[in-house]
Figure 1 (tube, rainbow, N blue to C red):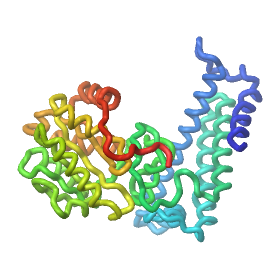
Figure 2: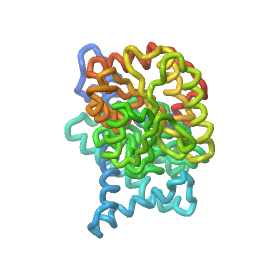
Figure 3: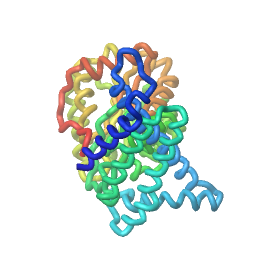
Figure 4: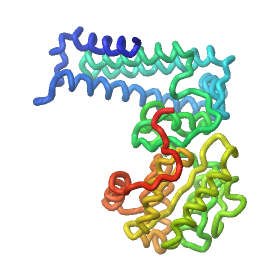
Length: 368
C-alpha cells in the first residue's frame, strides 16, 4: 500500500507540473522516462549528501573540541540502538528515531530542495515523495529497517559495484570508522572507507616472496597488525584477514582444502565472516584456481577478494603492486587489480562474466 502510494505521489509530482513543464527533454527519449531517471538520480544524490553529513558526524565525535564532540555524540545514539555486536537495543529505539531517522530524512529533503535550483520542479517533488515514503516505512518499523536489524552471524555481502546492500551497511555498525554508505558506496570509494584495514589482524602467507613482504609493509602503513608466514597454521582463524598466494599448479584440492579448513575453524568464532585475499597471476594463472576463486567470490561464508597480479608484481614491481592492492581494497573492490588500467578492466569483465565459477558454499544474497 505504502509503495503504491509512493508511486502515486511521484506520478502526481509529474502531472502537477503539467508534464510538459519538465523541460529537460532529450530528443528520442520519452519525457516520462527522462523524468523517472532524473528522479532516481536526484534521490541518490540526496543520499550522498546525507552520507557526507554522516562522515562529518563521526569526524566530529573524534574531535578534541568539546563542542564538536557533543555534536558528533548525537549520532552515537544510532550506534547504541544497533551496537557493535549487531544487536538491537529496544530502549534506544525512540531516541534513534529522533537522533538519526528524522535528521536523515530532513537532510535528504533539504539536499533535494537545494537541487531544485538547477533542476525542474517535477523530479525534485518526485524525489521528495520517495524520501517521504521511505521515511514513513522506517517510522512504521520504528527504525528496524532492511539496513538495521540484529544478526547472530553476519553473512558476507554480495559484491554489488556502486550500490550498498544490507550486509555491507551492517559492517558500519561493527566498524564505525568505515562503510558509511547508505544507498551508494560513492563516499566510501572517495575517502577510502569501503574497507577497514586499521587495527585488523592480517596473516600474509608466502614468507620470502617479494610481494608478501611488500604487501605486509603496505598494510602495516595502513594500520593493520600484520604477521607473515610461509603457510597458515593453527593461529590462522584468530586473524581477520588471510592473504593466500596462488598455490602451485596441480594443487587445486590442497588449496580448496586449506580454504575450507580456514572457514570451518572460523565457524562461531566471530559475528563477521573471515576475509580472504587470493593472489592469482593473470593472465597465466591456472584456470581451475581462477574458477575456484570466482566461486568463493560470491560465497556467503567468506568475504573474498580476487587479487589479480602479473609476474612483475610478484617480483621487481612488488612495492607498486602492494600500493595498488591497498588502494583498491580500501575502495571496496573484490576484484582487485594490480595491473595496468586496460588489462585491469579487461580482466574484471573476463572474471565476472566469462569465468564459470565452481561453488563450494552457498552464494551470498543481495538481500537478507
